[in-house]
Figure 1 (cartoon, rainbow, N blue to C red):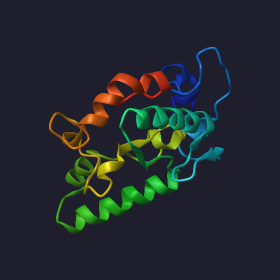
Figure 2 (figure 1 turned 120 degrees about the vertical axis):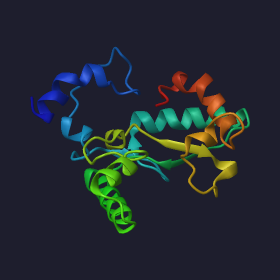
Figure 3 (figure 1 turned 90 degrees about the vertical axis):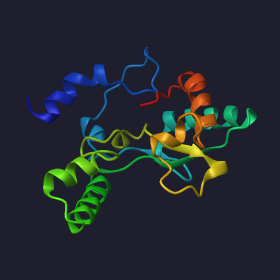
Figure 4 (figure 1 turned 60 degrees about the vertical axis):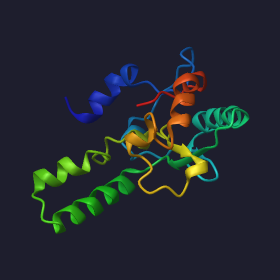
Length: 168
């Protein structure tokens, strides 16, 4: 089965977190691989309208509870993801890694173009804005007990699904 056939047959499994289960619509499979033309909104990020509205609601609720959500990554096209991949590949190769080592290193935090959830327009990476100048903010230890983003993580564990967001 080719990738496009797989995507068309697997939409029920993938799901998009910001659509009510009763709402049915046709989803362009090219959107899911970063090659579509999504209608994106947002001032400091780019998301589909449903995800953007949910983010605004979630951020307002978090703010009332002392959490300042800052989006550090949102929609990425196939070409942007390819640029990230190629930049990292060149960097790690120049450090003397072989191809297998480079790929293993890249996929610790990134993915191949065409496979990123950021292509969907519903995916965000967030931090606590109170620590916005932190280096390497997406390292998981920073969200665990004792980490600077642990308060945010605990709040998200309790509240994110109320707004249609699911932690990955």
